[in-house]
Amino acid sequence: MDEVRFGPELLDRLLAHLVARLPGCDGAGVSTVSRSLRAVGTAVERDAEQWQRGEGPVVAAATGDETLVQTLPDGVTWVTAVPGSWTEDGPSVLSVYTDHEPKEDDLRLIDQTEPLLATATAVIEFCADEVLRADQMVEMVQNRRLIEQAKGLVMGATRCDAGAAFRTLVRSSQHFNVKLRDLSAALVEVVGGAPVADQEPGAGPPGAPPEPAARAARMTWQALR
Image (cartoon, rainbow, N blue to C red):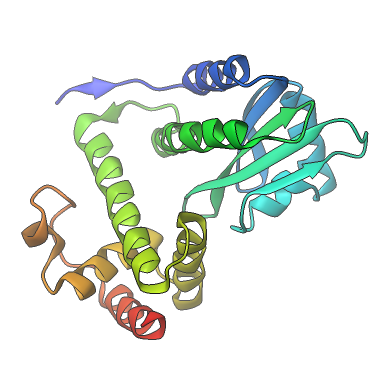
């Protein structure tokens, strides 16, 4: 079985690339759960300081709320905190520090970069410095596809944006105490009327979602319609 090694250097490169491309940006970082995972530039100190205090845009974004754009106490620096993919304990958070309020083009670049950073973060957290097998990587990509499909269903049912759809799924998974991946797979099956593997071969690992997730999906979909 082919194996791929991942490490923090991958996140460092992605973060540095974002900083270089974003005008007026002097730092960016990725956090998970309750700590700063990796950061470059001024984000090294700023992310760590917010987690130490237990408050700030980065900490607030980790609750699964929407993207936050705020000024720091210095009145000069702006921070954009974007909640990303949901892990077992909470979302990853991308923090970006700029010397101006982010413009539409800035936010578009951040939104384009966040999924790649979130996926890289999930991979690194998943393998925890071990070797990640190719089949494990495929499963992770499949899980993300299922979550994206479920988000699309929520968006279609409620006419909301992607961020609001993701928060709906997160709240439902927390309320019913089921994994986001299982809830997403079950929702796709409930709406599609067939197992995920039958709807789209290779879309997800074999096996039906656990019954608690299936029940949660049915109740969630009923509430959305």
